[in-house]
Image (cartoon, rainbow over all chains, first blue to last red; front, side, top):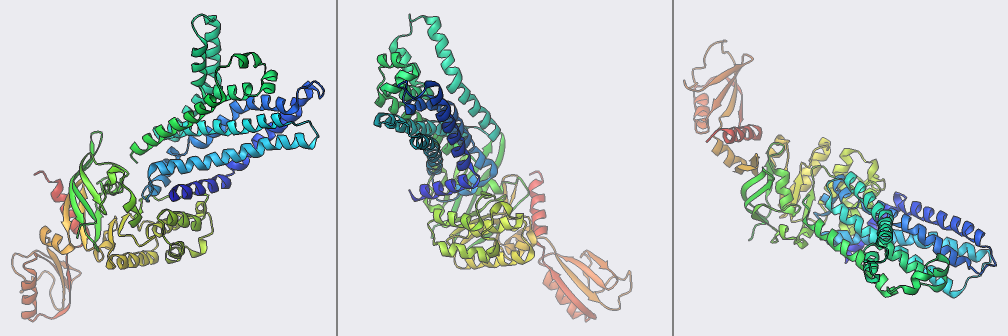
Length: 277
Length: 306
């Protein structure tokens, strides 16, 4: 445990020094703030759409693109990069297991992501609060759930990035593969699924099959969790209909995200421990 | 007393290339062993095998009572390693780097920081490693390897990039550790440096161990002639000294000096004759074959077809 904390502390210090933390926080804050200001304009203030709910809808849609990208940027380099720089050689001559190195890095990167998300998105709430918008408990709960699930989504992609990093020979390949995976999971998968549903016209693909297909993509799990999880939010996200039929409970969705983190992490650890340096 | 390192018939293959083939040796407490060989002779591979960074294709390695290939790592607390091309995280300072490694080894932080002074990095300790020169990084590499008085030190080309003064300090530190019971294995190209220091030499060629023993043992095995230089006065050019045995090959150097290649068993006899004939000897030098020559000899005999 000590080794894990030592490694995590060092990684966090490095992330602060090379300004990863600053860059991620500023980026997320800028987006959250611009969406907060822009987002409440079209709906007006008296339409009954509470500003926080609107922010949850727009922000979570953007998170799906952005948080995985940041997570992969941080993580694709974690193993193969240290090997190329030669620092891994020395580290592994110390009394640490390879899984400890991986878990230490994971904690560090997750901390960085959590910090950036909480601070960046928290800024949006602070602004709404300062401008005197009506903020109720349910809205706050939805917002908190969004922050939590965003961090979890980040964890998923950090774990996936490690797996790629543990498998490939050089950093360039890792970066390329990660961009590919990002495109696939964030963009292509949904389009393909949509295409499939249109072509199928509801004949072969059952509700259960659709649920399974949605659970196979962590980005979709995240989307379902945020857009259907809270009644008010789902109304404004246009997913109330889907939410009505949703057979996937919050527990299932959260479990899916946790599994999407643990399984790639386990595979990353396995691949890493078999690697020869 | 179990050996600190025990390698039994170790072979490591990368595809069709055999980096190390069928090597066996033991390293015992307090030994200072020089591992010499060309680039690509398998020195680094051997060290990586001892660290468990790679697994042997055949055979087994035991290090401090553990099998590193099986992922056992607690004995690495008592092991120091300096890789050939050492690199550190550029964003951390020298002090932070040293602290990080001391914590991983669970060793006293204050002692580890003192090592920075020992290697002469005291003044630069709070600068980022990214700003260090090659020599400074090498010093930091040494400092981290010495954390916690390791029982086993694996040093891959430790003195490259070090200035002569620091080289001296480095060997003093290493020799003190060996004297106190540490086992030191160091690979190097600088053979003259190792000559007086290493108690034992292992010579490798193309992944095979071609010689292993103390310098004296290797000299006996190699049977290379010692070189005797005698400075005599009043010897006409072209004149063969009367005391020289007929068979002994000799050279004249700049008029006064006669250089004789003497086989090991002839050496004493020859010296006796020189003294006995009462020639006017002004000076005398006996040079045993150097490590350089021994190395070249063993490589040649390894390359010769059997």
